[in-house]
Structures are given as structure tokens and as C-alpha cells.
Amino acid sequence: MTQTTDTNREGETLRLPGAAMTEPELDAWFVREVLPLEASLMQYLNRNWRDSSEVEDFRQDVYVKVYEAARREPPKSVRPFVFAIARNLLINKVKRSQIVPIETAVDLDALNIAADEPGAERSIIARDELRIVQSALERLPKRCREAVTLRKIDGLSTREIAVRMGISPRTVDAHLVEGYTHLADILYSHTDAMEKKA
Amino acid sequence: MQPKHHQSAAEIGNRAADWLVRRYDSEGWSEIDQVQLDSWLTEALAHKIAYLRVEAASKRADRLGALRRPATVRGRIIPALKAVAVAVAIVVVFGASLFAIRSGAPEKTYVTGVGGHETLTLRDGSRIELNTDTSLRIADSGAERVVSLDRGEAYFQIVHDAAHPFVVLAGDHRITDLGTKFLVRRNDDVLRVALLQGQAQFDTEDSRGRQQATLNPGDVVVATAMSLSIAQAPTQILDDQLGWRRGVLVFRHATLAEAAAEFNRYNLQKIVIADSHIARLNINGALRANDPQTFVRSMKMFFDIRAEVRSDAIILSR
Image (cartoon, rainbow over the protein chains, first blue to last red):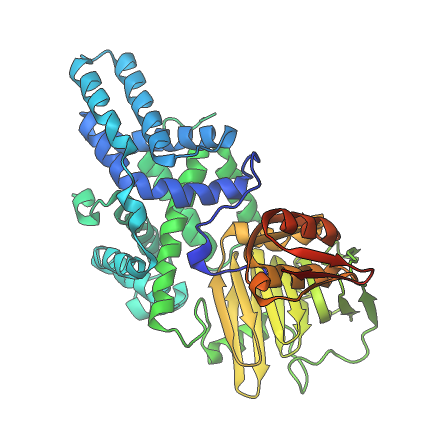
């Protein structure tokens, strides 16, 4: 077989030079290159935006801009690209909100260098992946964790999980929705599910 | 561009997770659901990104299953007893042999030659695309639609009809569509099934007994006489595997030997690699399936190799 489904290889993008990415390529690129930067991006946004309740929306805006820009032209170096976009968004927001911008602007300039550091996130190797996901699972709220474990590890269907947990299939679904949402936050933002709930 | 600005990222994230659970975990995912999901995903880029993000997290969790139970088929396996009940409910009960085609149904055989590519449209609007060097038989008894893939590769886009199940037979294996697009490839003793859209049921029965799994989008089954595995493949890989529909072969980290074998499926002028070092070289890229000469020319550009071109073969050596 020429094609491989080896999950370790899904990280590679191989395009003929100059070609724009197709939509599926762009999606894969985003998951592979941008999502691993989320923890540092959130840190950056949290440090530079006083209202922490807005940071998640901010992240969304950054992602949309990153995706749109990459659609026009895929960046050579992803980390500086993402942080440049985050920085511009912060600056624009500061300008629009007309709150005293001085410290923030200074801070932004100082932080700009951080964008050029090689990403520690990328050094995570496959060997650690299972351990990381497993510890993320352990950090889920109890019922969520139970439903996700039965689903992902034991491979049970919603109906079977419902019987096992003594709840309705709809409640199983709700636990899974909550579980996956937390998993995404833990795996990418490195925020704790319990903290966020509080 | 972003019509749902009043929706917070948290709300969108929650909605995305909800779609994901409905699509992969809950029962009763229909074509209408798929259309609604597609429209939600295209409504705003933020929707799609939130979906990609939660889907990526969920897929990472899928790998835990592989860790715990490496020897068994993982995924949404229905325990054998229940599976029988489900099968009876949705699939016509077969006679003495589970995989026997019912006698009496008129049967037609369709064959493509090396390099061939043909599309069949069935009465119900279902489409079957035959790749190179493929042979399949279609029997439509009125009650059920049965296709036997005897050799080669075909892409199925099936119009679902619960009353008339669509079944693909390949050796000991059976795929029953539940409203689907899927790819089946059978060569030598390996069967590969990739599900692109919808849902299908995969059955296999051999001397060791019977196994059954429900396939969801992205699932790839690889079955040999000795093993059966189901794994999730990224969309990109699935797209690559369908390159032949556009006449293109896509290679990612393929060895030259693998690429040559792939080209040889499509062409009578065979690429022969006369050197084991060359056979192990790695290549990437997309190339026209019916043009082995361009492939060989680019190989010569990148690697220090020689090519002897004959009418029936191209021999590569150092």
C-alpha cells in the first residue's frame, strides 16, 4: 500500500511547492500545527488582556484569522505567524475599546520575542501521547470520565453505557459532550476541567 | 463572515461537541443530520474550527483503546449476541451460508482492464466507480442489492434504502451500507474498506467465527486471512486514497517499491526496480496514474538512478 493510516504519520504535509492547501489539508494543518500552540497562546492572551472571561472568545478570533490567512498563503513558520495575529488582534481591540492602552502596548512589544522561540509543545513525542491523554482523562469530572472511558477504551455504545451507568442514553450523550469539551481544554489549553467549572 | 458573533466561543465549543457526539457516538445519525452538520460547519469558520478542535481531542482519546486492547478489534464493536439481533433487524436474513448470494437474482458482471476507470449508475441512483483491473458482479433481486467484488477496487456512493439493503461481498467479508460512501479494495489476500460518509456495518466470518463492527466516517478496516483491524484515518489520507477517481496517485512517505507497485496496477508498462537500495527510497507527491514515464523522469531528477525504457517495462537501477 502506498497510503498509510499510521497515525504517527498523519503529521506530515507534503505538497508540491507553491500549491495552496486544499480544505482538508488546511484542516489537518490546523490540528497539527496550530492547536499544539494553544497553551502558550492562552497564556499570552491571559497576560495581555485583563478580562479573563473574554480570553476564550479572543482565542476563537485568533483561530479564525489564522485559518483565513493560511488559506490565502500557508505560513512557513507557524508559531510567529499565530502570535503576530494574536498581537494584532490585541492591539486592535485595545484601540477600539479605548481603555488606557499604554502598559498593554509596552507589554505586547516585550512579549513579541517569545513568538520566535522554538515551540516546546512540538517536542512531545508519540511515546508520551498516551500518557498525556490518559492523565487528561483522569482529570475529567467523575461521571464524565466514566462515560468517556466506557466509550473510548471499552468501545461500548451509548445504549450499553446507559445500561452500565444506570442512566438514560441522552444523559450519556450529555456526559460525552461535556467530557470531550473538557478533554479539548485540558489537552490544548492545559486548563483544568474542575477549575473551569468553578 | 462570522454571522454568529453574539455566540460565545464556549457556546460554539459546546455545540461542536454536541455534533461530534451525535455523529460518532449516538444512534440514528441520518443523511438529514449530515446535511445539517455540514451547513452548521460552513455557516461560520469559528464553527468549523471548534469542531476540528473537539474532534482532534476525541480522536486522541481513541488511541487509549488501542493501548488497552491491542489484540482485539477496537471501535464500536457490537457484542456477538446483540449483533445478531441488530443484523436481523436491518439486514435480510441469509440462507445456509451467511454470505451466499441468493440464487435466482439476475447477476451481471462488470470488468475494467488495467488502467480502466468506469462509473456505474444503478436504477436507484447509487453509483459505483470501478478502478483499474477490477471485476465485480451485481445481483439485484428486488429485495436486496448485492455486489460481489471479486478483484480490484471500487468506490460506492449508495442511496440508502432500509427496505432494500445494499451489501458488498468480498471473500469472507460483508459490508452492509446504512447510507454511505465507502471505498473497498481487494488485492491478493488483503481487503481494505474505508468509510467516508454515513455508516456501514462490517461483518466477517471465517473458521474462527464471526466478527462485526459498525463503521463510522474515517474508519479504515484492513482484513487479511490472519488479522482484522479498524483504525481512524485522517480525512486527508482518505482523500488521497480516492485520488484515482481523478486519475491521480498520491504518495506520502511511500517507498519507491510501493509507488512502483501502485503504478503497475494501472499500466501495462511495468516499473521494475532492479536494486534494493533504490526500492527503499522515499517519495512524496501526486502523479498521474497512467503516466509512469513522468514518474520515472522525476525520480531520475531527484535520485541518482538509471532507467532503461522498454515497451513493456521500465527498469530502474543504480
